[in-house]
Amino acid sequence: MQRYFIADKQMSSKSVEITGEDAGHIARVMRMQAGSEVICVNEQGRAVQVELSLVDKERSEGRILAEIDTTPEMAVRVTVAQGLPKGDKLETIVQKGTELGAYAFLPFTAKRSVVKWDEKKERKKMERLQKIAKEAAEQSHRMKVPEVRAPLTVKQLAENMKNYDVCIICDEEEAKIGEVGRLKKAFERLEKEMTMLIVVGPEGGLSREEVNLFCESGAVACGIGPRIVRTETASLYVLAALSYHLEI
Image 1 (spheres, rainbow, N blue to C red):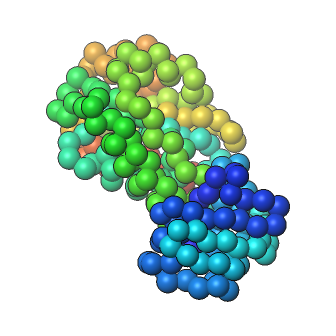
Image 2 (image 1 turned 45 degrees about the horizontal axis):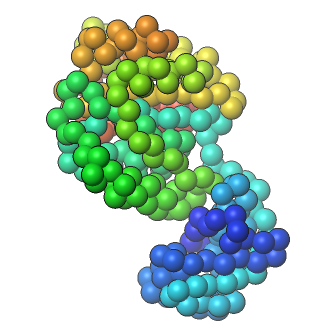
């Protein structure tokens, strides 16, 4: 059943209203009609099954049939701090990371980031990434759309680490020397409702100065297996491993 995220004001105790691009998607792409059913989730995470009574490309309405109590959200809130990568890799990380349960995404400009964030295009870029997160959350039946935050500097990211219960760094240099135990130990520290930060460098990896700064700020440098993975794969590896650890 198709899922749509809507604002709190669009959901009452008995009905919902769907507008904008979502209304167009219902009418033009899904070609739904009155009597079709969808799932709607508001900003508070209330999920309901809805029978549509009005379908229009500008606005759709429906009555609430039932509350949905089950949640696919991960018990730990995970933020992915990603060193700015080249091309459309950040879009891939946001899309697939959302599917795997990430709570938020925090880009940062690393020393070896080839791409520099264009402040003139920041609003459009952020809107694009947030839209990708929303669509991926709908597809994967999430109860929350992950937030894509504005990029930070390395220093700002280090200062932010105090806000997380557990911080890990995906460090290829640790993988090269065979480090295998720290990721598992980090997972074992986690309890329900805790917060975790996964730090991944750009294509060239993190400099030793950056790794040392993050470690001084409370992070743990981890190898994530014997193989060296691409920047767009590292956080997905950790999210999948964490999902297995917590949920299976």
